[in-house]
Image (cartoon, rainbow, N blue to C red; front, side, top):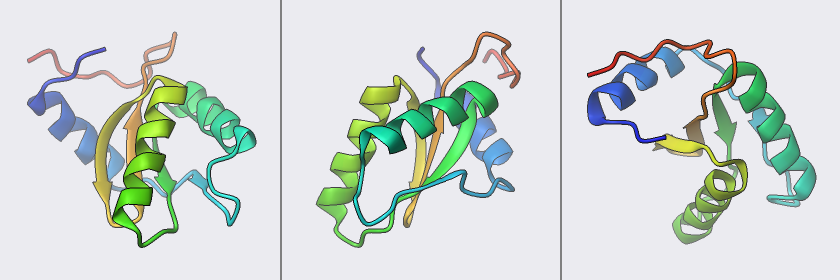
Length: 98
């Protein structure tokens, strides 16, 4: 799914009050964590994931892997928080078509 800049801005606004749903632990990105992110995306469509690392390259690799494995769209990365979106069957979030 392709999302334009206006839609990304809208999703950032929707995500602002949300708390992180998934927290990566010391083991990093495991299959169980990917499964949990996938489940959360099915349930919420728009989620925050907390990535506890200060290494930018490592964080970028983790973000890329999460988006690839879950087929989600990266909306934003702020500090250690990743915001991702994937539309579900119910289409719970109405994105403006601009």
